[in-house]
Length: 68
Image 1 (cartoon, rainbow, N blue to C red):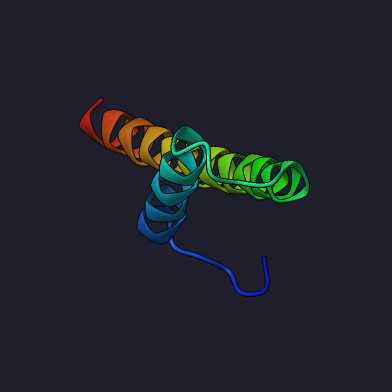
Image 2 (cartoon, rainbow, N blue to C red; image 1 turned 135 degrees about the vertical axis):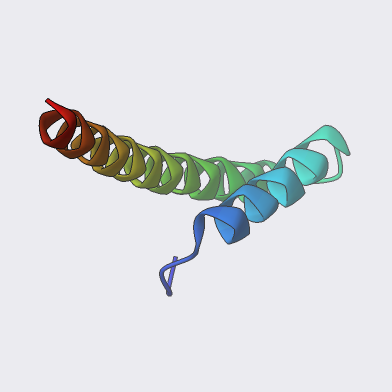
């Protein structure tokens, strides 16, 4: 991947790849490339979700400590 994608862009690209794979029209070499790209996109999405989860957890802890 050349540019950093947003979470939404990555999910949309994953959906495109899934549709391509399900169409059974890809050559074996292209299939391998698409699977590698999908793996990279999944990793990107996982990292973004983990970061958001950590940020939300931090905010909740801060609010809890203020309320005590």
